[in-house]
Image (cartoon, rainbow, N blue to C red; front, side, top):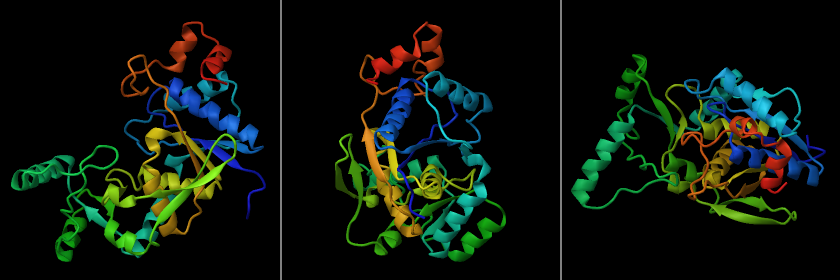
Length: 292
């Protein structure tokens, strides 16, 4: 079924309070939806069960309503749909593109340190700055894998990037759009992510898998998100192609920075919208300060 109007989505995680960076992204999604006469959905990306909390989800609704935003109901909550993501991972397993990885982060770091000492060269990193996986579990003996799985040893599932890319056309790309509606192709390079985790140890999915599956299910046509997620589009286009899913148009906006030039972040305890509101700043003032 072809959507009758463009569909946008704002998809925060309830693992902390929203800040001005989230406000900008939410307002920009709403602005694009108005400009293109489209629809705006809200999705709660709460697969991280250890960090996401109900009070943060409630605060998301409160903060967005205070900003004057409206969205369609019902709101999709990812933690309610693990079976859906498990099925998507199963399709990749059926293609023999995923393999179990039993390594801890320390084990990966130790392996890399040994190889750096042997070669005298720095080990490559992915676009997020993490060490590329050295392939420790990629070629384990099948019987060893079976035994370790049979005793319930914790494991993630990684994509076999070489095998996945062998199924791809010579080049992969997505379409980028701007405020004037101009569209241009952008080539992607999934290889720079190495054998990325597609299913985490603690939950049957990952950010990359769940966001791709949900965007297709909800018929999202336009994804508007920060430049910090631009590189992740490499993986998303790859997964979309492997799963036979449509690739939305993408717009990666600039980030809101703090006074010293760092991006706003929950982990750095950037000032929350609730604290801005408590200082007596109005929603209209916030919107104006962000250019809306």
